[in-house]
Amino acid sequence: MSAVTLRPGEVSLAEWRAIYRGAGVRLAPGAQAAIERGAAALARILARGEPVYGINTGFGKLASVRIADGDLAALQRNLVLSHAAGVGEPAPAAVVRLMLALKLASLAQGASGVAPRTVALLEALLEKGLTPVIPGQGSVGASGDLAPLAHMAAAMIGVGEIQVGEARLPAAEALAQAGLEPLTLGPKEGLALLNGAQFCTAYALAGLFEAEALFRAALVTGALATEAAKGSDTPFDDRIHRLRRQPGQIETAQALRALMAGSAIRASHLKDDERVQDPYCLRCQPQVMGAALDVLRQAAATLAFEANGVTDNPLIVGEAGEAAEALSGGNFHAEPVAFAADMIALAICEIGALSERRIAMLVDPALSGLPAFLTPEPGLNSGFMIPQVTAAALVSENKQKAYPASVDSIPTSANQEDHVSMAAHGARRLLGMAENAAAVIGIELLAAAQGCDFHAPLASSAALEAVRARLRGVVPRLAQDRLLHPDMALAIGLVRARAVAEACGTALPGIAE
Image (tube, rainbow, N blue to C red; front, side):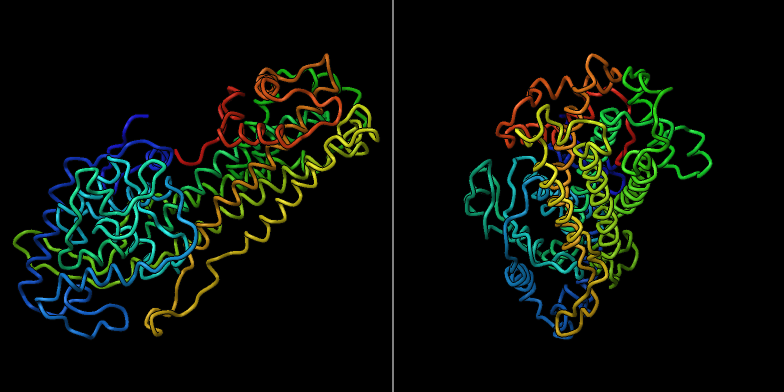
């Protein structure tokens, strides 16, 4: 995977996705001028000797406390150490790397006033594979992701831990082994590193990228389940969806038609099908999945802006020769990320819920016309009885997790910070929800393929037969009951590895392009 060249303010979602999936990162050479301009502007502000929040004052409720010039370096170090107060399991390395890249792109726009050496150390951490160990809990999504970003900053000054490969080392030791010096923070630099929404944005982007993969896999398994149940493709007719005008719905129907094109199974019941209409889980796939597609794209648009923005406070502005200013505002408030995360959560929940309903339909002979629980000898064998129960359990868990985080708030910092976004909560849950939905879709893949087996020698479309072949290469048909957990793990692995969508060879709608 080729390295991504970060052009601050102009990074595409596809590039953020590549970083999340392991691509290297380097800062565009042209960014250096903006970094130096911001550092020079900060120096001019300091020379005036005026009180400026976070530069020569205390923080939060202590903003009125003036700090002596000789204590400015200690002020920034104390800020980092006191704020590194997170708890819980560490954030995944892929999320932390994405967070580092987001912070790098933000600082490199020159509005934070940090020195070039600070930006260079962030870039070096990414280049050398040094991942700060960051507890996942402790951010309320306003005044920035303070605790998580403080742990990142602590690692940069040689405090805390850094993950190198599979090992967790003291930060100072990890930096030394990589030939890096711990950072000595200058005025405002601790605050610049701590302020911002990069932690929750990284988690939200990760959730978006996983949701995109889930969406594509569920389109394929949904089409395969339609074939297994000998469902109709009439509900996917373009004329239906053009009349409603919802763009995601139109694209989803087009993808489903393409997946089923040329199916001998479908051709076998075109004329003599006694059913007038299929259950909603088959018939309304374009409407439900199309709505999820539109919502995910809306969230993607919000996160694309956020990922390229500057969320520091105060912001340093002023070209060379101009009077520099420190503008205090609230760009650290992560309400946009909170709303985006909530939208992603709703979409993931519904993608999994619809998939589970198709599983339930397939195992019910009254609805599917297939043997009960998709086993040749029901009674002696239980077949897919309990995998459907597992899918139901996962869907219900996701429903509980889908409650909007953005409607919550709690005052902090002695009521100075009296409204917060809870974006970190909303974003952190997404990866767990995506894992649950991936498991549901993996179970559907097994069930739908098993259902199609009963129609032999009739085959589905070339696209769906390629998916069945990919599955059958690792999981054989279920003839008699056997330990199903290994089969499920393999099928879920195909979903998580994006192999289901890739195997079909059909262009499917995208989100993070």
